[in-house]
Image (cartoon, rainbow, N blue to C red; front, side, top):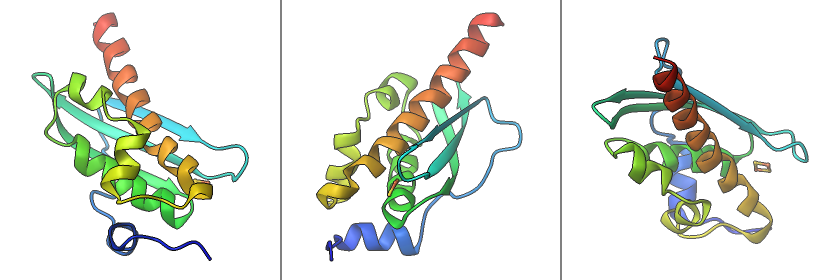
Length: 126
Ligand code: FES
C-alpha cells in the first residue's frame, strides 16, 4: 500500500476550488490514456493575473489532490508565474507522492498550462 502525506489526504478529502467557470477566459484539459483519468481546468484572467482557477477531475485520489493543489498555487499568480509551476513543484507542495502516482501530478500542471495557452491564443486572435 502506498502511503500518502497528510497534505495529499487533506486535499483529497477537501478539494479546493472544485467546479466549472461558465465564462472562463481559458480552458484546458489533459488526460492519461493509461489510467484513463482526466481533468479540465478553467481560468479567469484580469490584467495578467489569474483571478480565478477551477477544475473538474475525473480521476484517482492523487489526481484530485493534485488539481486542488495546482488551483491553490496558481490563483492570484501572474500568467508567467503560473506557467512556471511544474509537476515537481506540485508533488513537492503535497509533501511527495508515491512513485507510481507521480504521473497524476503531471495532469494538473499540464491542464493548467493548456488553459493558459488557450487564453493566450484567444487573446492573440483578439
Ligand atoms: Fe492516473 Fe492518478 S492513476 S491520474
